[in-house]
Length: 272
Ligand code: A3P
Image (cartoon, rainbow, N blue to C red; front, side, top):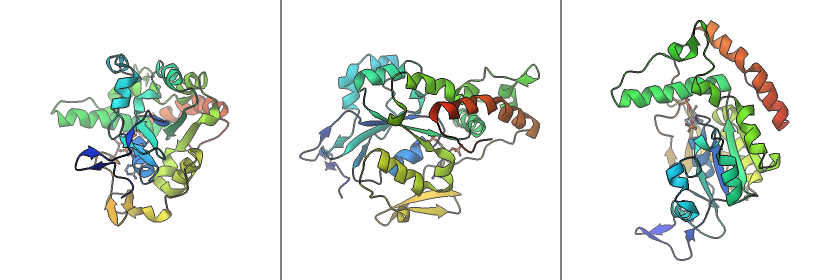
C-alpha cells in the first residue's frame, strides 16, 4: 500500500525521516489518539506511533532536534509527518520551543467539554493504578476540598483551555492552530476530519465510508481497505458517577473560563 514505508523492516527507497510539519498538541483525553488514527487513513500522512514528549521532557529536549528527528516515522517527500503528545498543550515551556523549531508549523488541538475531560482524566489515572494493583481515591476526594470545589486539582487546571491557549497565541497566529471539536469527533467523526484535511491542505482522500459506528464499542471505528478496527479498549471508557450537585459546581466553575476561551479563539463550543 501507499502507506507502508518499510519492506522487511528496512526503510523503502526514497523515504526518510522528517521533522513534523504538524503536531497534535493536546489536549490530554481530548481524543488525540482517535484524531491521529483517523488522520492516518490519509496516504499523505506519516504518523509517529507513540507519544514523543520531546518539547515537554527536559531529558528528551536536551537531546536536541537530531534526537527528535530520529523518533519520526519514515516518510516520502509528498507526505506530512505528524506526532501527537497531548501534554504539550498544558506545558508552558512548549510553545516557545515549538516556535524555535518551526515558527510556521500548523498545530492541531482537539478539545472536549472541560468537565467531561476532567472525568476522563481521572478515569485514565484510576486505571493506571488499577493496572499496577494500587489503590486510588474516589473522584470526590480530588474534586472536593473543605466542602468546596478543589480548583487545585490538576485535572481541573488542564481543562482551563483559555489559560493554556494564551501561551500558544503568544507564539502562533490563531489561523495556524486548528481546533478539532472532540465531542463532534465522537458523535460524527467524518466532518471533523474533512476540516483537518482542508487545514493541512491535504487532498480530500478520507471518506465517510472509512467510518462505521460499532454498537458494542459505542464509538465510531475505522474501515481501511476492508480492514475494520476500533481504538484500544482504554479509549471510550465509562466515567465515574458524580453527584449531580458536584457536577453542577464543575460546570459552573468552567463557565467563565470557557467564555474567555471562546473570545480568545473567536468561536464557541457546545460545552456545559
Ligand atoms: P474516554 O475514554 O474518557 O471516553 P485521548 O486519546 O486523547 O486520551 O482521548 C481519549 C478519548 O477519545 C476517549 O475518552 C474517547 O471519549 C475519545 N474518543 C473519540 N473518538 C473515539 C473513538 N472513535 N473511539 C474511542 N474513543 C474515542
